[in-house]
Image 1 (cartoon, helix red, strand yellow):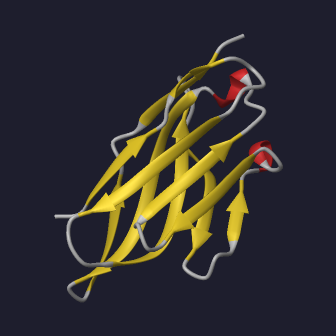
Image 2 (image 1 turned 120 degrees about the vertical axis):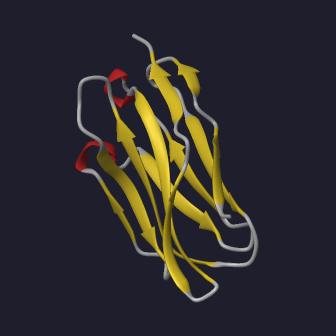
Amino acid sequence: QVQLVESGGGLVQPGGSLKLSCAATGGIFVITAMGWYRQAPGKERELVAAITSVGSTDYADSVKGRFTISRDNAGNTVYLQMNSLKPEDTAVYYCNVRIIKTGRYLEVWGQGTLVTVSS
C-alpha cells in the first residue's frame, strides 16, 4: 500500500521560511504528478502548487514568487519550499501524488501537516 508521509510543518514568524516534504513509500511505482494543497480554518481546500512528471509547475497566485515546488524522482519525494511566509499562509498542507502501480492509476493523499505563521 502506498503511503505519503509529510513533514516540515510548524510554527514560523512572518517572513520566515519552511520546507515541506512528502515522501511516497510502499513499493515500486511511478509518480506521474504531484501537488500541494492547503486548507485554512473556515476556508475551502485550494491548490497551492503542482508539478508534472516532466517538470512543469503551476502555482496559486497568492504564492507565486514565494513558494517553489520540486520533485526528487529518485527518492519519490515532493518538496514545497515556502519563503516570505505570511499569516495568510496558515493552513493544513496536504500533498497529493498520482502514481502508476501494478498497472493501476492511483491518487494518494498525505495526512496533512500544519503550518502556522504567527503575527
